[in-house]
View 1: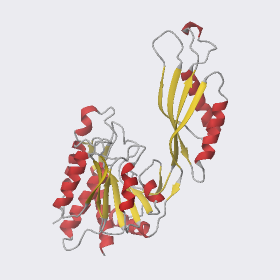
View 2: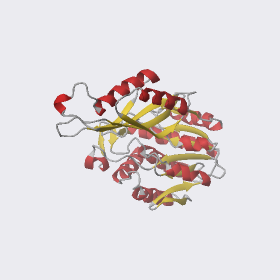
View 3: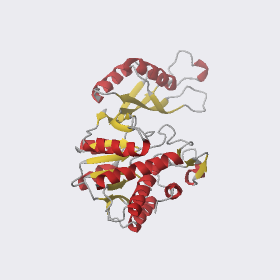
View 4: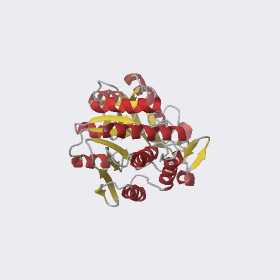
Amino acid sequence: MELADTSTEEILKKLISIPSYSGKEKGVLEYVASFLKEEGIDFEVLPVERDRWNILSLSSETLVSVHVDTVPPIDMGAEATRPKERNGKICGRGASDVKGGVAALLGALRKFRRRLPDRAFPLSMAFVVDEESNSALGSERLIPHLKGIKSVLVLEPTYGKLGVSQMGTLEFSLEARCPSFHASEFEGVLNPIKLLFRLVDKLERALEREVNLLMLKGGWRYYATPKLARALLEVKLFRGERFKDVETKIKEVLKEAQGCKLTYRCEDYEEFIDFRCGAILERFKGAYRNVMGKSPELYTMPSWTDAANFHRAGLECLVFGFGSLRDSHTEREAIPVSDLTNFRDTLYEFAKIHSL
């Protein structure tokens, strides 16, 4: 009997209702483990940290990996874990990034088990923690357990496009310390907040790209110019660029600032990656065509993903998913029900191809 579309929708709503912010994934992991047990799937629980673990089911050389953690509610408040359906979309924290992917994979598993009960589910599966933090411990600590795995499909919101590469990024912090003066004498003195703003403009000209200003802190209520300002910034690293070369250009710009003490610190970086794409690429294209009636558009994932860790381990990788990356991490986070259905059905077709 064919699984009704609402079944995958209900899985997603249940997942959204269980908070799983990075570091607090226990509840959603328990739900996934219970689901796999009900479907008769063998799996391992692999400790990562206290009350944090990965779930791994090994059945073939192709792995589908998806992270279960999300960013915090930010400005969603209590609505973050109260899934709602509006205008054909399921809304809530993680709907697109990436509990929609978790629900699609579980829905594909259930559909496969119902339609092809005489066949074992032919895809290995990993549900990992800690992707939404710089440490990415989940995928890092999963790698030693991937015996026999040759390729990995990483689920992320990619607008239904197929990620065959990943943009590099350099995330860095700046701290500016300047002498303070009575505020009425602000003309001609260095204000560390204004200094950081000006540095962003200079960096954009020197690097010939936009600088993402993620955070800016500084100032006080006293009637004196502030002493301190801090910023968290990010720039993209393009194909062929080396992190060290871009960092050198940044430091050269910072040397031009006089009269204040400037401190630079690299917070994290990943250079541009062209994934190894072998047999998994043609198989996935076939699955996509079976559902969408056309070949997928190839895509460079603009954000860091767990695929970086799998790539470094020598595995073939693809990044794929439906849903909007732009709206992820915001109060607009949602996934259209039609996208969720296509997501599930593409993974189901991918499994069918592997079962032949």
